[in-house]
Amino acid sequence: MMKESLTIIEDTTLEPRFSLTAFLKSGRIHLSDFYNQIKDTSSSKHYLDLVSHITGITKEIIVSPSRRRDHVVARKLFMVLAYRLTDESLEYIGMLANRDHATAVHSLNTLPMDYNDYREQYKFTRDWVQKASDATGISVAEILSPPDRMLKATLKSMGSGV
Image (cartoon, rainbow, N blue to C red):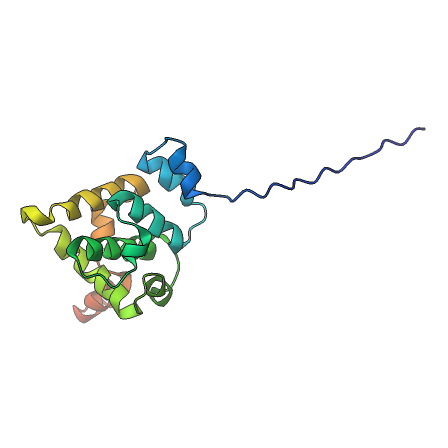
């Protein structure tokens, strides 16, 4: 009986699981495709890429100390998406944006107010939230809903006994 030889070939090319640069160069710029590329990794860092793509603002500017309205709204949108779509703590999400957890909580509470600001110069907020909703598949209402623990505290104070 003849023994079969087994040849093991090592793959020396280590390609990253997701590359924003490669994705953008591929010409597929559909947000839902972009989200599908990153959703399996479920890391807050990837939502920073998504928000940067939606808003056209670089990641560096999003996490910068800038207080320009569009930069602040992009930062809030990142923190809200990271909170809604990952299990990471508010401290970690805040750290990624060079902020603390209190700023992340503030973002969760104030993005709905920004969304409902109908002044023409702030129209971009509604567009960005809608694009984020389209890309991630979660509703605008879910993106803008209050944080779970705040909702529970409100219901408890109203006597629901959650």
